[in-house]
Length: 141
Image (cartoon, rainbow, N blue to C red):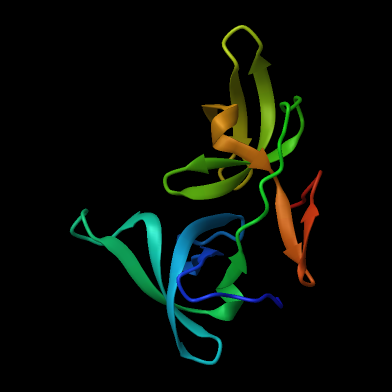
């Protein structure tokens, strides 16, 4: 998991207490506590008070850089993608597309749950492997 990080820069963080390995939450790196241990603040997750952005101490094994934005003209049924939901990016598979409305029905891979969304809340699924981003077309969980 080699990458260059910048204090004040954005990262994606895997939260083990959520219990899954396919959901990432965007956060800003506030500072490095010690080598490989970061203090971060999440962009869309809140503390118990519901108003303060959640801050956590996380090891480098739980972080990765934010993936590059790749323009997509759309997704087809069966495509693997990420959908932005509840403050994080979740791996999903396209189940249905309504060309009249532009809405997609996607199945969250972890929950086997159907969610409706638009393309603006979707991205190509990419994985950080050996210091580079790889577009993943299929995933076995």
